[in-house]
Image 1 (cartoon, rainbow, N blue to C red):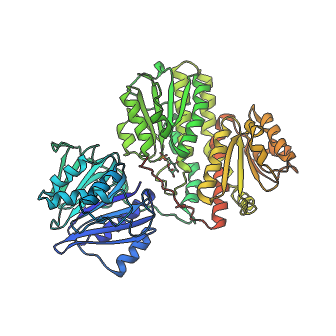
Image 2 (cartoon, rainbow, N blue to C red; image 1 turned 180 degrees about the vertical axis):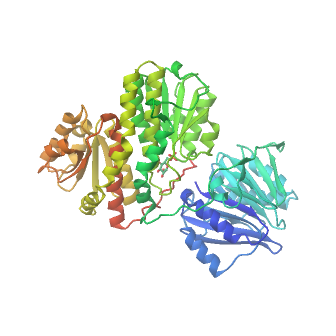
Image 3 (cartoon, rainbow, N blue to C red; image 1 turned 180 degrees about the horizontal axis):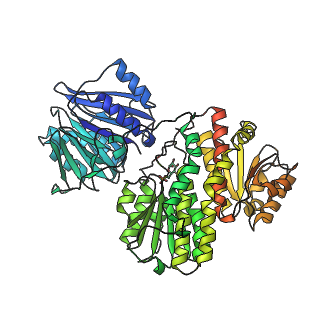
Length: 607
Ligand code: G6P
């Protein structure tokens, strides 16, 4: 992961570098650093932990210069301390890196044998020494960088400073994103356009294998062979305003509450209320000819995909392959030319999902990206984009992106059902109606917040929590467990309710809360039997269901959360909200860093 920023400015760049890094902090917060180059040479400040620590270091010892680079780190190689913090420098060259240099051990051995001395445990430092060796041999910064890039295996976005070259930054991209920002007599580099949004709206994106020589007057872009190439400049629509928490204690809570609105926004972009019909943006292929769908994603987005599989198979009667991106890309799956592959990602940058998209594109499948970041690499590279209109999601644990992904997948299932002739007009109207009711129901569900907080209060000292669900409630159980793990650090597992008896039930005793996601559907009675099995073994059940379901477990369950009675189709979207709130309150009451939990990052651009 990691976020990088580079600025050739007209005045002191340190404050702008720090501001850019704050916008990139979602990419990692293990350490941060900046470096500048002036006539006096390279200077740098680094600090372990979040950017506030770096700010304090810069305040204590200001750093001067109008050309600089910055980095916020998600540690891959080497513990997150100051020595391993970027920028790395040997005095001749300073650079920041996002990605992983896979052949760093071999390069480090060779460079050490040549007398280079390494100070960090990182993979990145080899790039410093490779480029520096070229400079010592008399090469220009451009030539030294180009030659070094040829020797790197893995993924990287780099921004590089050179002693004696105030006003020069070289950037390079392979696998990890890098954007160029064009100012008036100023130039910028950033991991994304968001980092640069307050500085400029004129953005171009490097393509894989590109490197760029940046000077105050402009950018010269080259491919790996050193041939000049042109990349389009466009005007980004991203806002430069910092997103605030409003009156909320955490971004995550704010984002949970925003769901009623953003679910409505996302649905309205596809729904015609007069005709009660759903449409999707035009696709450059024939949806009615789709015989098989492949859904690929990671993390929370994968659980959205799981719900999507149930829906597409049920309403469009089209078989769905479902895969975690990191498995799919290496599985050698026999994908079908002309088949439909759908990639679900909040960030649109997740390395494994992006690689899966490219794999399918190369196999001549049709590719659709369901993304929340409209200018992301996936959005740019897919044949068609189905945006989620969740707005910027800042909390690392995904909430509103998830429920809006579900809305888009629901629309896709319905439209595909129509195109395939599996869903008639009445069927479409009934399903669309169920979707349009969700925003109002979501507002109602949020009223349980205080009650859920009081349940959370009883779960602060537990070691394990199980989540159970059937059908589309099963992915919600998995998502509930993931949310809890991510932000409270309590061990949690989600299970298909029917699988409990095949092993997990051995773990049940009075110390293990079991959260049951049980909407009133045709599977309810079966789930209810599984709940009885848990209660019979002393399990502490937290039952989430409608009034009838709750009545069935009154006096037997440890706690209940009453949901509005909704159509089965809409249930997973609404039942996501109480499991999000439960995880949130447990974590907030425990006092963990809810928005930036340890060891995680929001956008994972390494394998
Ligand atoms: C990271 C985030 C998760 C997210 C996953 C996939 O692990 O912490 O919240 O679900 O990446 O991210 P994507 O941007 O592809 O949805």
